[in-house]
Image (cartoon, rainbow, N blue to C red; front, side, top):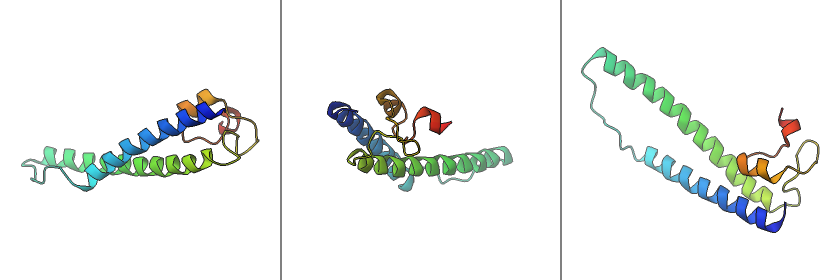
Amino acid sequence: MNNSESRALKKQIGERIETLERLLIGDQEGGGDDRQPDDESARMDLTISSAVNSRITLAEKQELTRLKANLLWLDSDDAGFCETCGREIPYPRLQAVPVTRLCIDCAQ
């Protein structure tokens, strides 16, 4: 990975971090409707959507953590090389999966 690819990848990761942080801050501020539904079906929908939203938020937090770690990794001597086998990770793979530190063979 050359310097311009590294800069582009850092920009891509930075933009995704900003997006995730905005989403997570919005979730913390609430913004939801606190009214209780009137019927059992609506209450069930609310219960299911609450569980789904919790899982989505957890996944976003995990992605955010990995993205921030990869920003630091991109500044290291190991940047762009597979953590398992040491081969160079192709730049298109890093673009497609910016949280990866494994080549396609080791990821399988």
